[in-house]
Length: 112
Length: 115
Image (cartoon, rainbow over all chains, first blue to last red; front, side):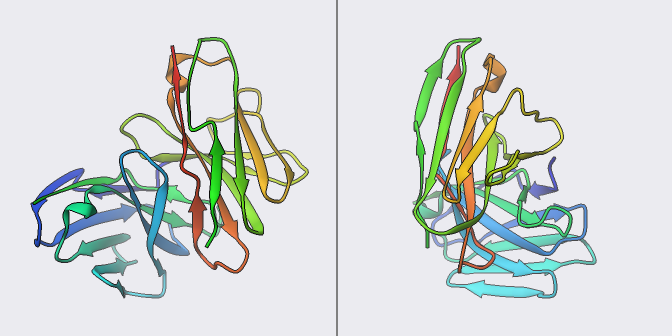
């Protein structure tokens, strides 16, 4: 079953611009993670934020979490053509253990 | 970090046949999982592969259709049985690796097309 919704479904920007993707989920979570997938290949783990954290940074990535709204956002700053990929949020819950429940994903296209 | 390999990387199969996908992890593993990604869609958890016992299936997935084995800690197989075109998807295995807290590693996926 799908835990969350992501918006936008697709995002097209120019190199150097910032990209913001949002994720909403339905149930209480242990943590929320963001993954990147290039062209239907395997997933790459980007960043994790725990339910008691509100913001986290990793390089050009910034993730926020609002548990009261059951939502998260991923900001990619100074985007590059190599950032072109699909981005998914995924949550873990107490009930499901470490199994991941994925959102629908955002397809990001960065043009040079 | 961990490297997860899957075989085959892709296959084209005829309706009614079965395909077994193998997943091998190069590190010590705690949990292993199988996911399906239908064309243009997100990932859906099929089951948790339990070592030495029956897999735990998610709603909508049954053992007769997707038998799973995990004979040891680092290896698992997923069989897609009696295939139909609706089974055309990417199948991915993943694993929680000892020492890598809160990071689940994914294999490259197996792209299955059923004719």
